[in-house]
Length: 321
Image 1 (cartoon, rainbow, N blue to C red):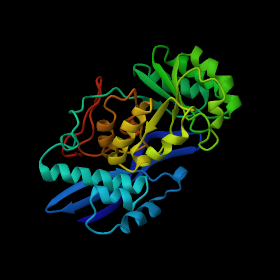
Image 2 (spheres, rainbow, N blue to C red):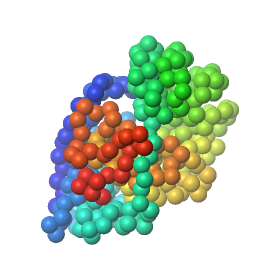
Image 3 (spheres, rainbow, N blue to C red):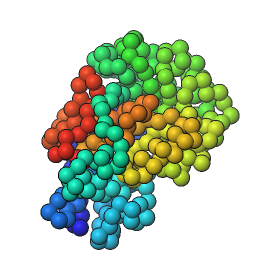
Image 4 (spheres, one colour):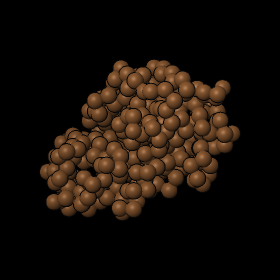
């Protein structure tokens, strides 16, 4: 089996900002695997927060032995972007070779459209109010926060979108004291869930303070091995393919997390429809779906995922799976 890696960039509609910085492009790696006249593809987003660059991820993939299958891949690479792109490409290859859809191969029900959150990036309160007003017809908004001065931002978003459901993502940007101060206001403003309020590795305080609304682990949860460290601190886990290292581990993490009583969120990095396609399968039945990456892009794959009033639809076979 031949493995080819290509660097690609997709322009964003506007700058996307979280507590760690801003970007104007989605910089991805596309992996294609080819054998027996069949080609499968997958996409990953190397993430600096986890020590990844496009150079380092390319090097990981280039070092893989020939003839790898999905099972061997799980042992050959750690969870992360490199394994994700290859794993998803192998799933796509297997589906195309068999002339069946991935969900059939995985023994899962056919996926249906899913309502997804739409993300408002971190900005000045007035600009976040304007962004919320433009997106007020969307059923679920995700607010990027993560500074000690977030209260005006929360108020502004609620003013701009008085009827929308709200979730909040602090991206590790708060202290325990800031979160404790904000929590009553999150409830007052109708926020339904808060994602990763404290830094991973510094989140033991969540076991000691009140959690008046569900708290979701993102940076603190990568794969099944992460679950042991979440007990008593989190109520939900955010499963992302670039963290788990692909659909194979993501499906296993979803099952294990549910068995331990966690509710499920399925999220994404800022990538194209190819990155979201396998996550649509993973997100079936999740309590929160956050697969809005393509909605933030000025350009996308062909054929792209379809987003409409019913949500994000499963991919066409020509895209993935």
